[in-house]
Length: 140
Image 1 (cartoon, helix red, strand yellow):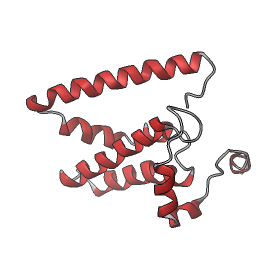
Image 2 (spheres, rainbow, N blue to C red):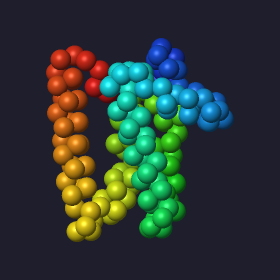
Image 3 (cartoon, one colour):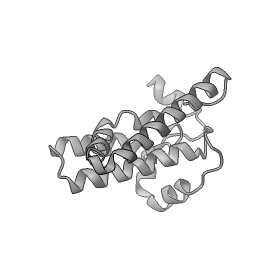
Image 4 (cartoon, rainbow, N blue to C red):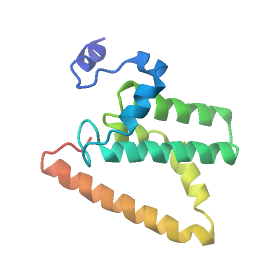
């Protein structure tokens, strides 16, 4: 229970009740205030858009199992809504089937340039977050 008490001190106290207010989530999704801060991070919002596209790809390509789709939805959607995208990149990293569906979509010779572009963007993002981390700036 200590973990729940600690979460009450967060800037955005997690709340399951936010699952019942999708319009507030949409307003929050569109309210990027900085490249990557605790609140209003454009990178967290971009990761959520990637998650949404990956879910669409999973649905279009018929997921291997319903369990995989359910897991991905729970791990990627519930934290995004309940903590208002604060630190969403940490939660998104657990939604590994989303990365698999992205890889499957880019696994054709005609889409190889997009794969290289995405890989390069992820490498630049990793370097940016590492620099923020070693300089004691928010990188979570």
